[in-house]
Length: 240
Length: 191
Image (cartoon, rainbow over all chains, first blue to last red; front, top):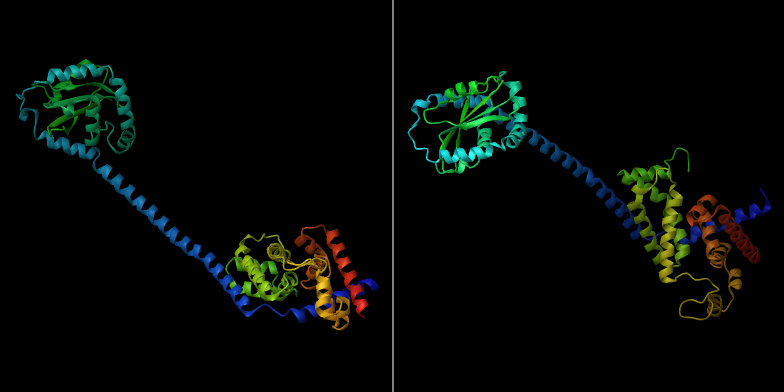
């Protein structure tokens, strides 16, 4: 090391010793404030960890609740599915066509049928949406049920009537019974009302003559209620 | 620092992770060197206390932003320098001897001579060497004074001084050399 370097080191050393003696140290209150702030900042940083744990618990509880609700919804849907329709049919067969008051006036029937005829031209369009509606249910119904899967569910029957027989549910004197024949995709092939003296079985026989290339299954019957509270039977048959 | 001691950077990261004891240890290491740096540039103890508190508050609050590949000492003194500069800009507390203090047209060196009845150089003869060099420090240009204090009081290397003062290595080295030469000359005159 050169003499200059020695002098420079001495200069720095002299200063450092003098500075240490002269400068002293910061006030005790300054030191206390600094260390307190350090603790406060550390506490604030730790708090999100606690909240994060709480947040995670909330999220887990929410997911569990959603799964529970979804499970209950599936359970209810299964309970109101084909088995419920079969039960309804069993209940209805106890009140056969012969027991139905066929003498009840059907004053609006012709008018309704003309309205139905006017809507026939749009049947394909409506059945498309009905097909979409039934797609998700028909897939699971096909898995769970017999090969000739029953179609009519109460909620679906209501929607089918609203779609295939517009105005029926609002009619003052609705028809006693209506029927639809749908293919496997849910497209409505034919529909109509039960004429006086006619039954679902007689309609089946008639349709088999009208649609010889189709194997028409039995009508699954359910009830829908009109706005006035009148019950209308809805029979839905599937072709195979 | 001994090899077995925890590095400054590790202590800061430990504090950022929640270890308050790590902050205490870091503060203990740099309390006095930082204090002396701030005191040399702020002019009085009250201002130095305030600035020191501000600086360490910033260390605590910004510790989580400290880069994993950074070095603590230049980072600390950069925080300190920025606050010292901001304070000096607002208070004009520390003036050069060749400049007139606020409210006067007379350079400070003349005011000191008038007040003491002796020139600053004559004052060196009556003070011990240490006090003389501290007094001489005030006569250095601010850049040279800063570089010298950062090295002599705080132990920063030339690289670190350059990083803190945002200058090149050669510039920091030159400032240090000029500062030492001037102080050495003053000491020799004193001797």
